[in-house]
Image 1 (cartoon, rainbow, N blue to C red):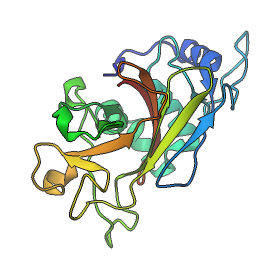
Image 2 (image 1 turned 180 degrees about the vertical axis):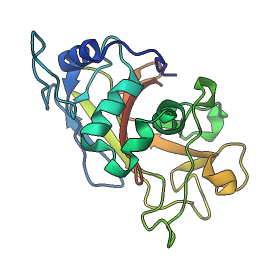
Image 3 (image 1 turned 90 degrees about the vertical axis):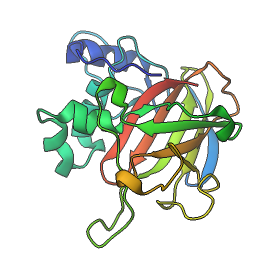
Length: 232
């Protein structure tokens, strides 16, 4: 499980580390698809006196001193989180109720329920004090809906690797939820308690094995993109 530091290093130190490890994400528009992502497809500014990292750059490997909260806050304010949500992520409850709510973790789930070659993911780890991420169907009040509509998984390495993307066309699932790419924590009704028991099944790249560190790059329909690292 990824650990998110609650006391971040200075932004200058963090961005320096990010600049040294940053690369780019390759996204492909298929429901479940993959592509080979070469090393350094998107390069941040070189580190050094007066240099600054590209806040939009996505690191391929986990930078030294990685701080998921600080990284996603900087990248979100630069444009990857809607402006209408900036006051929330920058406010006094920004970490617990907003940024932390959108970071992934691996839930305690019976391994037999998870299809081979998939990773079970939830958002907003309560063990870290984060609010669990809700999910909502499309409605007159929320025309877009509120769920993660894509998740990309890539082995956390600066070398060439496969970027595997899974997409989720709708929420909640009707009928066979596993076939739609979900599980339900504790089983039961997927939409109960504001959908906070939704587990996403993200397909793993073929070059990832158990114990590997992977990068997760995902998009919440309402609140934008988020990046973090997890161990499979």
